[in-house]
Image (spheres, one colour):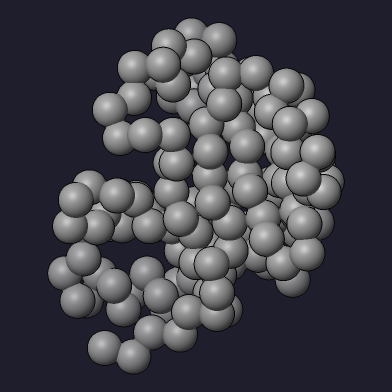
Amino acid sequence: MDLKINHIQHIGIPVSNLQKSIAFYEQFGFKNVMPSTFEIEGEKGGIVAMMQRGTMILELYQMPASHLSEIANRKDGHIDHVAFDVDDIDLTFKTLKENNFTILETEPVFLDFWNKGCKYFNILGPDGERLEFNEIIK
C-alpha cells in the first residue's frame, strides 16, 4: 500500500476547562491560532483552541456541558487522537477502505476550521486508538 503522509498534523486533547488549558499551554510558548466551536450529536457548545508553537499543534477541546463527564470517565487516557496531514483526503479514504482498515466515518467529514475548512476521518488502530487523517483545504 502506498499512502502519502506528510507529518503528524496535531494531537487532540479533551479538556474540562478550555480557558485554563489555554493559559497552561501558553506558558510553554503555544498560541491559540484558531479558536472555533463544534457540535456533537446535534448539541452545540463544544469549543476548540488549536494551540501552535512552531510546527507543533495541539487541539484542545471542551465538550458541550452535557458531555463533560465523558472526560473524567475516560478509560483510554486524555490523548484523544493523533492526526496525520494528507494532501488528498478522498484518495486516502479510498485507499484505506480498499485495504480493509476500520474506518469510523462513512465519508470524510467537513469542519469549518482554518480559513477554508478541513476534511477528516478516523481509523482504529490495533488497541482501539484513533488515528485521524486530515486535509486542510487551501
